[in-house]
Length: 337
Image 1 (cartoon, one colour):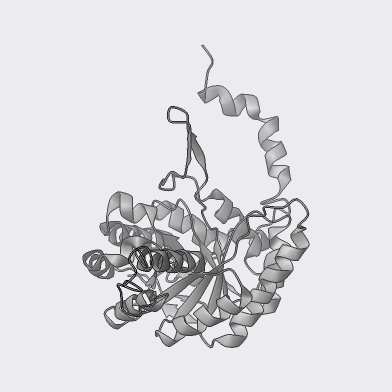
Image 2 (tube, rainbow, N blue to C red):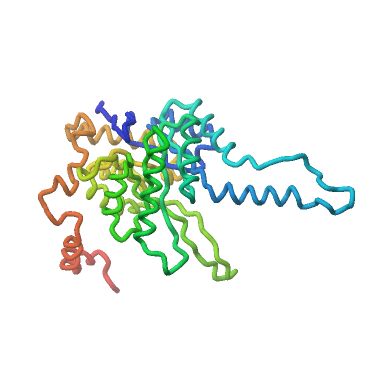
């Protein structure tokens, strides 16, 4: 058997398969199956500051809905307050106490002070690492990209200063120069990068003429953007690399490792193929490594990164031009009637 252990942000993991943030963590039977199948670490579903604020407002409205409808009635409830993040923190702590693999907390906040406050509370809950989700959806034309990036870099600096556990950044690919931004985060002390966050995109129901957000699983080949950036980042940053989105087979996992990823996150594949997907991938990864004569992941990790390829144009636009030059040959498999 090959050695599948890997290092992610200083955490020694038994293999490179990590469960990404999702509601799967709310199902104890699924977590147990994933552990038995060999999952190496679990990212708990995200703590959203917006959700806590909204729930708190709704809770307050419901408490006071019937007040003062009669002269005698000033309140029909005792003094209560919304639990805020307490339930989330309790569930994180419970998962940590009942699992044998490292638990990584996921955090989405709005204000710098909130990022720091929630990061500290999650660390107290006993998690092994923290994954912060950086993104921005500008609503004003006047806001410049540089200002958004500066604020996000400051968030990373503040969170790193506030906690002792490793901190990874789950990124959007929508930066003018993603590599430059990651370099800034690297200098700010980030311990890892998750490539990339998948956002729920809006859609329109043309029959009902309604605006809605569909919930879709990632699709095969969605991993290609993460593959490109893993290959570009390998050997050029101090932090760990985690590839995410659309990883649905052992081949996909191997590709990410060859490009330079330390670990991969899977979610949709678990929903689609059940927890046994993990065991299947690990067995096939072992078989491939035996066939190639690799004893450990270190033997081939980053082998096909830009740093280790002789082709100076690997991962660059020149490859796109090469495809265009051969377009007639490429499209022979799609004949027009």
